[in-house]
Every structure is written in C-alpha cells, then in structure tokens.
Image (cartoon, rainbow, N blue to C red; front, side, top):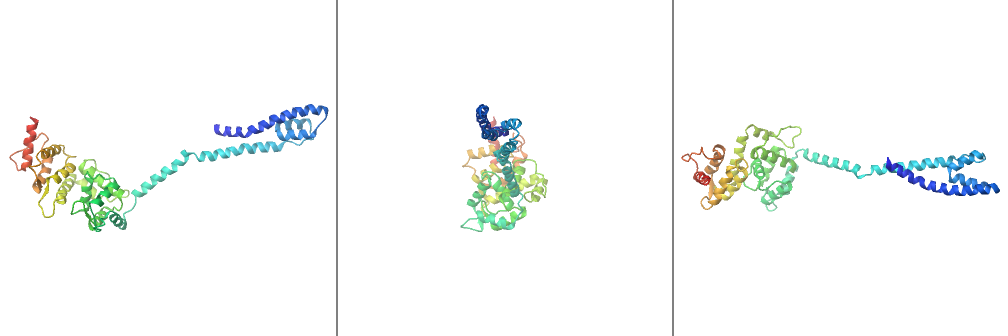
Length: 335
C-alpha cells in the first residue's frame, strides 16, 4: 500500500542523512589513516552506517559484524506498519457501518415490540386531558397525531375513532382506548400508525390488501383481514359510522359544514364527482343547512351507482332534493 511505503521511507530518511555525514567523516578518516591509523573513527563509522561497517569488516577482521544496525533497521520498518493499521481502523468510513446497523436494529426492535396492556394505558395517560383525565380530548388527539405524523385533515383520525368505537368526535374515553388497543394488540405509536395506514390504503385509496403474517405483523391484523373479504361493506360501515360520530346526541342532523368536511375526506378520494357536488353546495350555502341520515345514506348510493355524466340519473326517483338540484346544475353547466 502506498501509505505504508511513505511511512517507511520517512523513518529511514534520518538514517540515510547520518550515513551521508558519516561517509564524509569516513572519507576524511581514510585520508588521515594513511598518515596515522585511528581506531576510534572506525567505531564511529560502523555505528553510523551499517553498509560502511560491513565493508570495513571485510578489510579489517578485528571489527565485529554490524548486527545491531540491521536489527534496528528492521524494527524501525515494522513500527510504521503497525501505526498504519491503527489509522486504517479509525477511518470514518469504517466506523460508520456499525452505527447504521445499530440504527436499523433499533427501528426493527421498536416495530417488533410486543403488546403490553400496561404500556397501552401509559400511552393513553400521556395524551389524556389534564382537566378530564379519563379521556383524550381534541388537544390530546392533535398532539398524538402530530407526534405520530398522522395528517389531521385526512381520514386516519376518523379511522382511529372507528376502530376504537368512539361515541364522540375528537374524544376517546379510557375504556374505548383500552378495549380498542387490546383488540388490535397495539400499545405504541408505530404499530398504531401502521394499522391506520393499512385501512386508509384499503378503504379510502383503494389499494391492494396487505398480506398478513401472524408471526411478523406489527399488530393483530385479524380485523383487517376480515375487511379484505368484503371491502365495500367495510367502507360503507366506516361511512355510516362517521355520521353517527358527528351527529349531536340530541339531534337528528349534522350541520352542512361538518358534512362537507367529512365528504371531502371519505368520498372525494374515491369518487371525483363529489368535488363537483361540494362545489355546488358551496355556491348554495344559504339553501342547504344540514344533512339528515337519509341524505347521508343516499349520497353514498349516488356515488356508487350513478355514472359521472349523469345520463342514468332518474330525476323522478327517490333521490333527495339536493341531488336533484345538483344534477340539473351540472347538466346546465355542461351545456
């Protein structure tokens, strides 16, 4: 390796310099030796330069072999090699791999964490309303969604309420939370997000079902698998649940503002015609004030059965007035 050669060359350079100086002194020593021999200069030369010591040992056998310089040179070459090995082990590229593996293991362990009822209770208590501890209120639900990266303006909060069988919009009681999470075997946010995302993709976005494996599933997918056997029925169940959830206890209707908000989340992703329906309602906001159960039910039937061009719509049928007016508005608009 090129770095190793550089290190070795660097370690032998001072020896080469001393050898050169010693060679100069040796040359002058030889000149003086012709006049008068000096044994001490021989000793200095042999210590300074192994090569010179070897040459002079051939001519003068009284000087011992220069074994010590050879051993010193070998040791000097082996030390830089050891240092280079340590440098290579400490390179950033080498230490980065174990860190990324640890991060992956941490994520895997979090997803594979088994359900614990005590942990599900602790999760509930984290988001519970301090003024009303037995329940998670709107503020706690918003905090949960923010920490779990669940869009508040999407269908997933409604799906969560559906899975917990909540009785009031934006509120989960302790009993509802513990029963729902026990059924799904969920006691932390990662599997909760996975469960809501699975149902959002299946029912709202019409994506292919997820294959279930009881040994590796992050939560109990038994309910999800049952939904896959009748996706239309499960979707209709979610839709009707939303009306019951949004309707005040002592009322038979929900206000039109809430209705349009729910339709935009539940129906619009599946049925493009609903965007036009919402546009029509917005233009006539002073005409249509509320939605009863009949209108809510027939809106779903309208999306499921009527073609986008409205050619098969029967105006003399049992459709609500709002839908009759919408079809007339759309045909007039189309010309």
